[in-house]
Amino acid sequence: MTTHKIKFPFVRHEYSGPMDGEFVDGVKTWKPGTRCEYGDYEYSDEQWVADGEGSMVLEVLGAFKPGKYPERTFYTRQFIDPDGRQFGKTKVRVMASSAFKRMLKGYRHPYLLLDEEPSP
Image 1 (cartoon, rainbow, N blue to C red):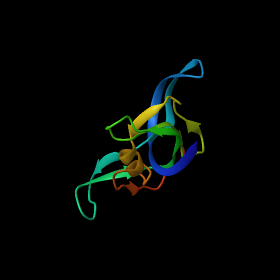
Image 2 (cartoon, rainbow, N blue to C red):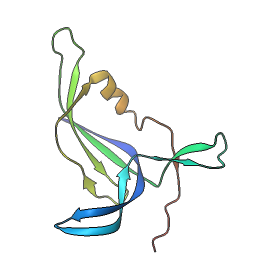
Image 3 (cartoon, one colour):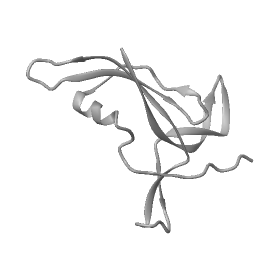
């Protein structure tokens, strides 16, 4: 099995719901991905932004080429947030190997990394 660790953007998110057997309200967490912000940016009115960077960890379980169909890669995915906490379901995922190779190149879209907000 091969493991790949890819730099990945994260945004701050406020979570309310069950956590560790209790209900929590308004807890700050990290969410993988970016958000769109509108404003005075250098090249356009909108920009995809991230509050921090962490990692996406992909573990390749194997590849299979079923007859005349394209090769498929079987893998699991986990995330490591900017604070170093690893999370994510370990279910097996399947993707065309050509698309998997593109995913290994990093996040699909350009984004701006903002300075992290000071903690209260």
